[in-house]
Amino acid sequence: MTLHVPFDNSYSRLPDGFFVRQAPTPVSAPSLVAFNDALAEDLGISGAEDADLAALFAGNAVPDGAEPLAQLYAGHQFGSFNPQLGDGRALLLGEVIDRSGTRRDIQLKGSGPTPFSRRGDGRAWLGPVLREYVVSEAMHALGVPTTRALAAVRSGDAVLRETALPGAVLTRVAASHIRVGTFQVFSSRGQWDALRKLYEYTVERHDPAATDPHDLFERVVARQAALVAQWMSLGFIHGVMNTDNCTLSGETIDYGPCAFMDAYAPDTVFSSIDRYGRYGYAAQADIIVWNMAQLATALVGLMPDQDAAIARFTTQVHAMPDLIRAEWLTRFAAKLGIATPQPEDAALIADLLDLMHKGGSDFTNTFRALSDGPEVARDQIADRDGFAAWAARWQARLETQPDPVALMRRTNPVYIPRNHRIEEMITAAVAGDDAPFHRLNAVLARPYDVQADAEDLTRPPQPSERVTATFCGT
Ligand code: AMP
Ligand code: MG
Image (cartoon, rainbow, N blue to C red; front, side, top):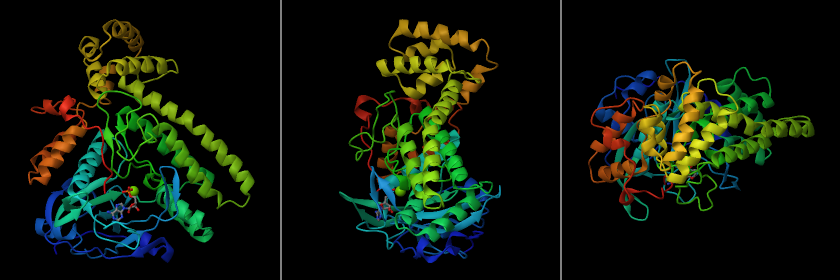
């Protein structure tokens, strides 16, 4: 093997109860679908050759310095607590320090069973692997904190779901895989020493300046508030905001049933398993507060004076909705060209969203059209008179803003990974044609730039193309 990965592992130095060492299970015929050269370079990975890459990122060969392990965690899934989840089909190979000096996890997903697999097979099929590759890289290009995709490999094995599907392995890169659920597993078991160790590890890795658990909590809350507001400003619906899919780093993680909204409707839900709309578009702003309350509950176990800790965590949790509103206002104001938002701008934004909702306007295309002026944008809104009245208020508001068009063009993407395009790409890949996958990646790498021959990727779905449900990444 010529590939060199400069591993520098720290999670594997934590006590035994944090993980189980587990080697990946080899697959029959690994073949490389994609390798992210730019990311590899950032990570200091060198000497890559395709045949090696396929074997390594399928788990058939373990690179020097890797110490594969399955991490333990728990989590609330759709509101009910599962005391033990853990990596059932993922393995942390190890960590590298990237060019900017940040420690990053390198994880295989779909690499075979682990002691945490429960009834699962430890595998992933090609569809969700390519969906996560495209959407996580698109999110990165859109400027959203997210895990990244380093490689995707076909396994050559069939994976049995409702039918037999082609298997695949994704290599994911993350600031860490520490989740709210990682804190919950130790706290729910009363393993206070482990909880303390996890806290210290997290502080060292993500928030070396944090002075105590309340301070760490404040920083995580700030990151998550900013993240969810940013998702909403792009019409992104995560779809499965369980506490095990909610990171301390503030990165978006686990692109199972996620989707971008086409027509604006705040109650949009895609996930086939989200029957009550718990994780719908607008609900995300409430659910993240609920998730943070679960983190606070776990952190209470670290505090000597529990009553005082509960009182203070409660105050911190109650402050979060205002933080989210402020982040939301900043993000949406920028989408209208307003760099210095005032509280009154919330009504201007809400009134536009209301017009969009009533007429079923495409979320992405309407905002992008606004950067070409009201005459262009009005074609996106059914209520012409309502839009004319709104546009007059908006134009008056922009008079005091320095360079609204430039701001709008870097906050309103032309291209998002539309769900019908993702489904089309998956269908093609299953039939052996990876061209749509590569094309989506290429266009979505520059989502704010109008590109030649990519107009079709801006189009909302035709009624026959509309995807109404997405399925969890299993
Ligand atoms: P997710 O919905 O992907 O966040 O996964 C939730 C939990 O189910 C995690 O503990 C996963 O490791 C586990 N899991 C999901 N799919 C599989 C599978 N095919 N085999 C084993 N475990 C799985
Ligand atoms: Mg998960």
